[in-house]
Image 1 (tube, helix red, strand yellow):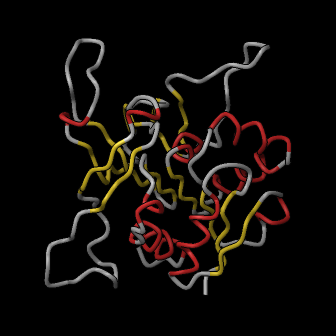
Image 2: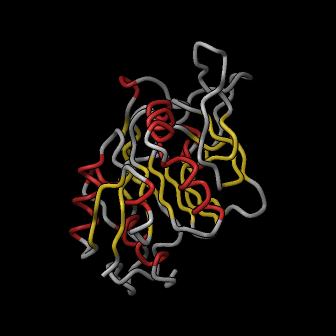
Length: 222
């Protein structure tokens, strides 16, 4: 049984703990470097990336997590967690000193915060996510069923480096117009080695396959 942590500083921590537990993992909240050292993988939940950044440094867990990520530690980031795993934030907020928000990094990608709009612009859509085909919960005799994805003030990925695989994109019809007045497809799920990130919240709809994939990654089975 895998012991997996959920960064419990802010956000929808309880939902991720419940989903992991339903899949048979030992799920524990993590706030400190000591607690981080006792888990085999970590989920960074949705919430406010600026708050997670600030509190992670206050609790002293930010540097410890950055070091573990550099050593190949498995981490899954959902929504705000995706922002925290990005090497570059396209539109970081700044504090009163003019200092930009920080991320833990690890994934060679550029992410834009709140890219799909405000809370009132939240939406759900069925989409295909690559990498789920071999999961035990997937019917091997049928095409992979779509993931019901919930986007709440969600980021998107503007660009990825060569070490990053795009697992899912959202069609242009579901995206706001860019500066040129054009709608384009946007990347909303990526994997880079032991790091996984999604713009959407699978834990909100009861979708468990993203977490199942992460557990397989931790065990070296995916």
